[in-house]
Image (cartoon, rainbow, N blue to C red; front, side, top):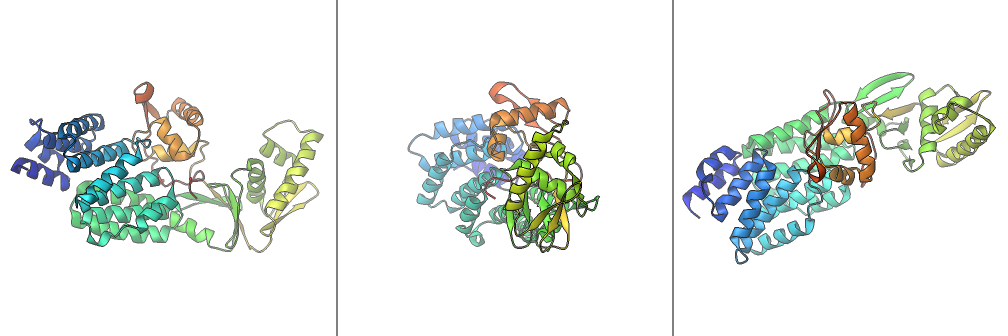
Length: 406
């Protein structure tokens, strides 16, 4: 490898893509094409980067398996940056195996962390945690140690473990400082800002209070009965009742919790749970059936008592009843939360990350676009969606909907 290629590779490793381009911008040999592609990716020109890395992989030929594997890793990183979450994971796994066979331990570790970050984006937390547990970061360069710690923080934040996330961010900040890569340090600070920003709202007694992730963690560990409108469940410190697949029951539970310790008139419960303005005997009969189902579902946590005018919630052991609401009163908050990371997402990638059908995601995007909250770029398969970060709130760490893998 000649001196210019070596110097360009060193510039890329230290986060200096312009310095790398100065050395290889006019060259078309395979190593130069690969380095140019990586430099363009670091500058945000992802389409151009994908083209250059693909050309490099073809130029290396079949006999240069190590170089081709490195190109595959670069393609995977570009796909991750472009939120192409459907990029074939098996290609990355095969490239990782090739790198390990040839003794390239650093790039093999980098490939594994790319796979872990993809798992985080699509909400497969158990798989990501299992992959992290098999990694040993102590012998890796500072940049990869920072990525390892960021991955731990990402899992902790999605599992509502604010204390563990903050500890991991401390390790990530130290490693990023040692690495001296500005983009990596900026990523750590972005995640730290998300951890400090409100992640949900506490609603109790007619009052609202914004909560950080650590405050959410403390609330869920308290002796309060929590109706979690972020992940559609009812819980106290000992037991959790998931109601994400039973929207009517959750709507009733949330309405009763919002009114606690007062009761809620029957007609109000019918209007909210059944979404109707007109109330007749069939609705009242249906309400009695659904209240009976709710009683059975939350048995051990709370009782549902009939009153003169309606129904009231009576916690069994808890001293307080709290509704944990999303930080934004927005019907499509889950889509906004993903888009607010500042990256351009396709509707298919959003559907994969949110475990929703692509058609439902498209409807949500159309609604948000009509209200000016998101914007589309491109046409057809090249269409991508963007949103501005929500000031004062977390971005990708919002809690508006159940996350896959929880």
